[in-house]
Length: 476
Image (tube, rainbow, N blue to C red; front, top):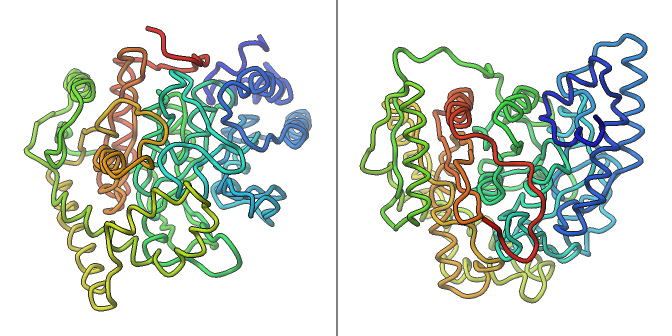
């Protein structure tokens, strides 16, 4: 059985450990063997925590032998994004300058997963400082390859965790998302990913010292899990939701809300903003819509989502204004070439004055209100994650047309992060050897509705991973 342990869903892995069908040590060793086999080909796991993981697994087995009740993720290995703190391990952000920046404590979501019995097995690669682009390439660890086709990007910035989950090196990944950084690699790697509502999961995104970042960084960045199935994503969601004194933003909203009256209405927008969508993505949206109709949802095509262009402009202006004072230092950390993605944004979008910034903050609230009204009528929205199949690595940093193309492709992710609502990325199939998928967006704090709809899609269209690396090109 041990050879197959890494293939099992996280829920099944935890049940096997709790029931003593396997030991936690066996489960961890199975994943470490898989990492040894696969990671040299895809370069997704950066700082491997092999001995720490084995010791944590042995402690789990000792607790079980002593008759203690184990948690819902007992023994389940997970990766943690290179920018998220794991106690006693450097939080490098993928840059040489932070190679020795050892974390004094687990970030809140890591602590929650540990408390549920899960075991961190390694960090996942990211773009340098999370800022070098959408493709997962860091100064410290190099490129991460898409396991479906090494000539396509795995996405980012949580690309290392998505690849680790897709290939069976970990059952779960912990990423974060401020405009698609969980959902895009989920689509590109054929796994499921959750961006929660702002305030659903506690987090701590401070980088150096006690000072917190500004309002954009506080409100836009949300930690979120990646998994191979919606059931595992739901399990991680239940563990991660809640409050923590280290994060006053996290609110005590129940993980599950009241059932909706009647059939849940789903708005379908295949081409948000009308900027164009690739035929395979349009077909993915149509396929998911058919699956939801079959499941009994009231699926309706609508003209568009609210205020797309205003939201994109406001997002960019607020983010650049907050970021501009630190740009000279950050640019040096990114290094030559690594700075191109942000440099082009800085050239395109000037920082706002103090008066303009205050107006933008009001615009932000006004757009959120428009979305709340939209989602009051349609509790769920079905649309693309990225409006193209996986693109070539580094397209967004190559030149202005490449950057604009990527920014356009992720536009629904950007806007839904801006308004703070949840979204679940879910695969719909494989087209031309590459995974395709959609996202389900919902009302604030109704992740349960998003997960339910994603489960209905998965029940009808299936699970795509784990996969073995196809380095050198995709196969049909």
